[in-house]
Every structure is written in structure tokens, then in C-alpha cells.
Image (cartoon, rainbow, N blue to C red; front, side):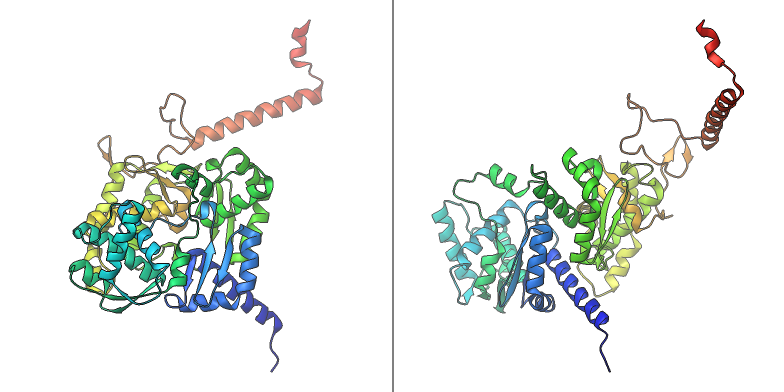
Length: 452
């Protein structure tokens, strides 16, 4: 039986694009922590390295036990977080840097307590006040850094667990460092002459002067951002997007196997395995986030006519209380399933809002949240469990808020749109045009009689 060459080509392209998407989602892939994805990347290493360099200007290195995609510009990774979902504090970042400084020189097995001693010595040499043995708070930050490195594949727990040491300072879990992986965790190290401001500025240039670098930065932005809105771009990048959006869409589609939606308000990349971005999800945080944007889209109608609408605080609070409050029916369902940890209502609320903000579906912050037009692509269905906002003593459906860019100059909202009035105005204009044409064809001099 002969093999269909076209089927082979399709399968080959699909594998390469799946490997590229895996690297975009996890720039550091290790054989121990992500064996399937790493195997796929290693099989297509040459093609991936060439395409990432040409399309996005990213550098890919593939070793025997790990692959590292080195990003620049808007491809900066998402903020680091603990296993509970809480973001890393500056203290935890300090411990992460110190642990890496020790591990890059040590290849043998080591205990958590011995590693803490070496870390304390490294901190003293660097003039940093850090000691994992000083108290519970310090030990928790230290253990959070270690657990991240285990998740990345730079460390392996061979006896006991890091969690044991976090709960009991005398517990001494055994760790096996993977030195080459540890050396690839941090890829943009500051130089001796860098200060914090210049270092961060060099890593976040989004509007370079040259056209080639500008188009490269634009492609990175499209690839790394859930939705790129034209109104958010600098003038030069907005012009580049208008001129090169289809070329950029084709290049990214060939690399990642994604669909590209180009609309008046902006551009979005739709990945085949979009669940990697956080929605949809079986996790309580993802479920609450999805229910929230569907409900808000049904009540507030984002995208009419521009990119976002204001989310009233009362509407947001009522929806979150219905979806993740202490009495929410979903909490009982989550408790019956052997799933992930169920955060308390306040923490679940914060994590759901953070997820939607990271995806670009909500913008702003407490007291000034706005729902973006992209939220409606996940559905628009108001949940009847959420009380309707009381407005002028009438229990009525929430009206669309003033859209971004609309309203009068003095800040007062525009009067509601009357479709019948619009039709009457259009009819009047058409009638005037028709009268002018009749006058022109009949020889009527019109206003010329008044010229003298």
C-alpha cells in the first residue's frame, strides 16, 4: 500500500507547529518534566530554530536534556507564581536568584538544609540580607523558589519533599540538581553597567525605529498577546499593522498553525489548543472566569461599537458572589470531585480576575474594570442567578455602558439611540439628494437666482 505524500506533509507540518506552540507556552522544556513536548521539539529542532529566528527573532537552543527558547520584547514571561497561585513576592524572587547562583556550580545531590547554608553564604558575599532559617516566612519563600525549579525540571526530589521542609524546619529533603537546565532558567542576565531602569527598558522595546525591527516587534506582540487592539499601539506600530497585518498573519500561521482574526478594532491569534491559555478549563479558577465573561458579555454587550465597555462595580460584585461566593453551588460540586485545591472565595475571585486580565478580556483594575470586545467570542449569556442592577426603581436589564471613545465632550452620556429617528434622518438626506438631481436635470437654476 502506497503512502499518501500529502498526508505525510500534513502530519509533518502539524508536528512542527505543535512543537512551536509548546515552546511558546513553555520556553524551557525539559526531558524530565515535559518528556512528550521535548521529544517533539528535539525531532524538529533545526526547522524550529530557523523559523523562530526568521519570524520572531527568537533564539532556540536544544540540548540532550532540555530546550530553551530565548524571547525578547513583549515575549516576556508571565509573572511567576507559587503552587497556590499566589504571585512571587520580591523576597521569593531573591531566593530564586540565590538558589540559581548556587546550583550553577553544584552538580551533586544535596539536602534542602545544606543548600540553605550555601545560599546564606552566597547572600552574604553579595551583600544581601537573606537567610532561609530565620523564620517561617523566609523558609516559605525559599521553598517556593525550590518548588518552581522542580516544576521546571532544574531540580528533582529524590527523598522526601520540599513541602516537608516548609512545614518543619528539621525535615531535610534530598535534591538532585540538573545543572545544565539550571543554567538555562535565566537567559537575560544584567551586565555590570546596567541599572534596573535601563535593564528593564532594553527588555521591553515595543516600537523600534527601523522598519525591519519594528515589524519584528509587531509580530512578537501579535504572537504573545491574546488580542492586539489598534488603539493601544503607538502611531508607527499602528501604521505598520495596517500595512503588514496579512503578511504577519501568514508568517505566524505557518509557524504556529493558528487562525488569525483581523478586525477593525484589532488582531487576535486563535490557537488550535487554546486551552493552554487558561480557557476553557476544568480548574475552578478557569470555570469562574469563563462564567463571568459570558455573563458580563450578555449584560454589557462589549464591542458596540468600539473595543470595551465599563463594568459597573455592583454588577461585577454580584456576578462574582454568584459564581464563587461561599454559597455558590459550584463549590459543592468542586468539593465532590477529586480535583485541584478550591481557593477560598476572596482568593478565587482575585485569581479569576487576574486570569481574565492576563488574557486581555478585562482591563483596568478595581473600580475601573472594562470588558473588552474579545470577551464576547467565549459566549454572551447573562446568568439569571445574578441579581439585575436596580436603576431608577426599575429592576431592568443592565444597559450597555458608554463604549471606549464615545460620549460627549463634557462627560455626559449620549442619549439612547433611536432606530426610527436614524431612519427618518437617512430618508431626509436621500430626499434632499433626489431633489438636487431633479433640479440639475430640469435646468432649474436654484440658488443662482440670488447671485444677481
